[in-house]
Length: 261
Image 1 (tube, helix red, strand yellow):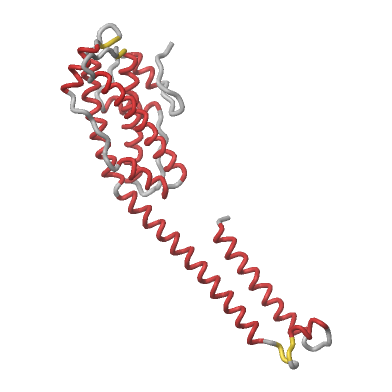
Image 2 (cartoon, rainbow, N blue to C red; image 1 turned 45 degrees about the horizontal axis):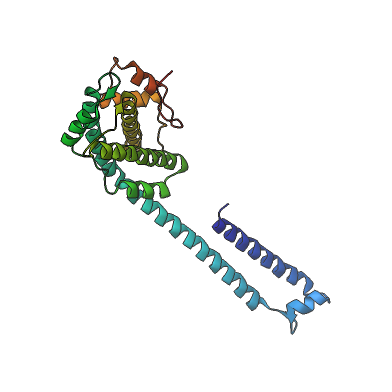
């Protein structure tokens, strides 16, 4: 129970107690007792004071209820406003994914014998326009997380977390390859990991986009089949790379991608 609900409950109990005292006072007013002497003055019940107190409690309760309603209404409005810009941000995020895909396809093509030569990889990166995350991506997701239900917020947190991991990996690799004397040897396994990062981002963004177009404020959980679908949309779906396909089938949101033994 929320704190405002406790306040309203307390106010209701207090009003009930006062009403009970009023009726009790009416009963004891006809008899001689210490309680009667407290409630009576000059032989008359202090109705004005009791009625004034009850009216004050009613007004206070109404004020609390009104403030609670206004707070919830304001929260709903801010939530709808945040969700209204989510599709635009997701569209920009898809552009980022597409840009990353272009470079990864080229790196994948220069793979030779399970690794990509640093000089060859650097030539690919030089021609590859560096992808940049949408400037308002984190801000929009953060605001939506604040107002979303727990399941939806959990999916948004997962997307934001994966974005941070993918972007950190990308920046590290990009900086290493862009050095004057690149020595970083990119293994095929590294490329597969980068591909699955992008595929997961695509899958999670797709689920959130479906939610914005639905009348229900629910989002589906990302499954391995969604990762495979994302790989197909991003042109990474290739039956010749059995290892990548197996990694997609074994994908789990709680584990990092790894080469099957």
